[in-house]
Length: 130
Image (cartoon, rainbow, N blue to C red):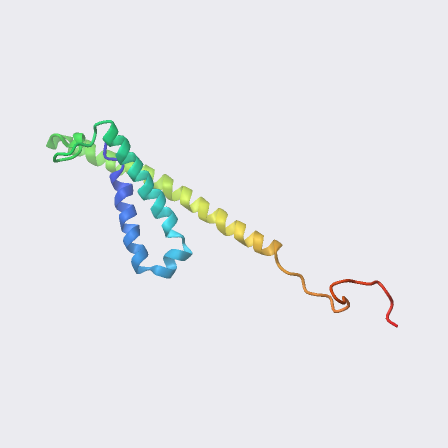
């Protein structure tokens, strides 16, 4: 019912962090994590809206109909939302690791070999010097 709030909050914080930590956030590809968190939170919010768990009047969540439901609200926000955020962050870390590993191996494969001074016009004519 409120599991999308923590990924949404972390996504908004990361969005603000990108504004202040420009080059470092580009190096770590924080925009990918931000897109994953905000996109997931958006789809979860849409699903909760479709299921009738989000309403257009305060307190906006049907899980908060009474103050006695506060413990259930916090439990779901922290544990379910925390697990979702951790899973998305773990997937982002794997994507980042794979991208860095792939780019390193690709750069090794495409390294230009040094030219041999015996080659003329890029061809080895296999003739003895005259």
